[in-house]
Length: 481
Image (cartoon, rainbow, N blue to C red; front, side, top):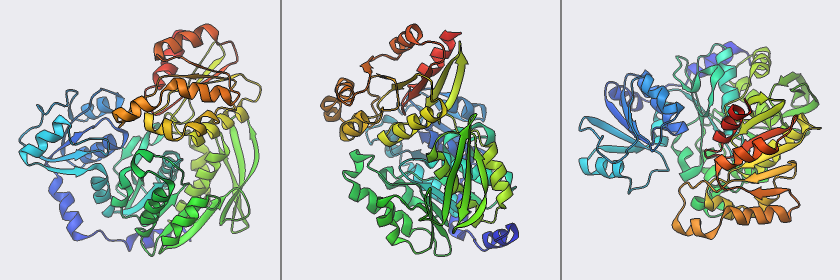
C-alpha cells in the first residue's frame, strides 16, 4: 500500500458527533489535574492547553514537566490540600495513582465537580482521530516514540502522548493537525480499556502490577479485552514469540501481523552487526526482503520495537525509505539508555528499567555495546509490592553487570503491609546468592560519593529505576566535573 492509499483509508475514519461535541465544550473551560506532574497527565495537560483549555493542577513535587506546563500558562501548586480547587473548575482529571483520600479529590467531590480518569480523557481525545495504541509490559515508550518519529518525518503531523520525553519530536506530547493519534496504552488499572484504537500493538505480556492484577491470568485477560476493542478494519501487531500474547490475541476481530527475530513471523529482523554504536539489521516481510535498517540505540529488544513500528507505519501507508530514515535518526527517549555524560572517560547512563526483564535486556545491551568495560548497575527498586512479587526475577537480572549497588525501595501505591513485607536488604541478599557482586547503600547521596571514590577510567555507570534514581546520574556527572 502506498502513502495515498493509506491516506484514503485514514479519511474513511470519522469521529462520532457526540465525542466531538464533548471536546469542543471543553475549550475555554477550566480543567484541574491532580498529579499533573506525571508523564501521562502532563502530556494530556499540554494538549488541552493547546486546545484552548484553562489548565490548573497539583503535584507533590516540582519537575521539568511542571515547569514546562507553567511556562505554557498552567497554574500549579505543590500543596495538594484542596485549597487551590477553584469554584470555576469545570472538570478534575485524576491518574490511577490518586486515592480517594487525596485532599484535592475530596474537595472536588464535595464541590460536586465532575471527576474523570486520565485514561478516559485520553480515550476521548483518541476517538476524534485514527487511534494507534501501543501496549505491552515493556517497550511501550520506545515503540510509541518510534512510530511518532516516523509519522512526523512522513509529514502526517500526528498527535501523540508518550510515557517519556522525546526531545527530537517535541517532548512527551504533541497536538498535530493530522488525523492520527498515537498513545502509549498502559495496562495498570485496566486504563487501556478506555481507548478505541484502529491500530494496536502488544510488545509482550509479563507479570507486573501484581498489586492490582494478582496473577498473570488476569493480566492476559485484560489484554484480551484491549484486543477486542481494535476496530475490525484495523490492525493488531504482536510479538510472535510471546506465549502470553498468543492467548490474548484470540479475542482479536481484526487483522493480526506478527514480528520477531526468527522465521515464524510476518515481520522478521535479522541482526547483521553492532558496531560503533549502530545496530544494523535486515528486515523481511513475509520472507521477502524489505530493506536494511539501522538504529543508534542498543539491544535486540529495540530491534523488536523497530519491527513493530515498521509494521504499524507500513499499514498506514508510510514509504519504507521514510521509515528507514526516521529509525536511523531516532536518538531515543529520555531515561531509555540515555547517556547523561562522559567525564574523565567514565560514561554515565540513565535508564527507566524497573522490571527484571527490562534490567536483563538493558544490561545485555550494555555488555554488547561495551564488551571490554567494567559495568556498574545502580538500581533503585520501584514499589515494595513489585519487589516482593518479582524478588527471584530481580535477583537473577543483574548477571551482565560487574558491580551492582541497590538503593532503598521507592514507594508508590504501596500499603503499610507491603512496606513491612520486603526491603532492599532482602533483595541484596538474594542477588548475592545469584553470584552477583552487590552491596546495599540506602541513600542516593551516599551512592554518589561511593561511585565517585571507586569508579575508574573506562567504567560504565548505569542508573536504573522508575523513581528518582536519575538524580544519582546527574549528580555524579556534576561531581566528576
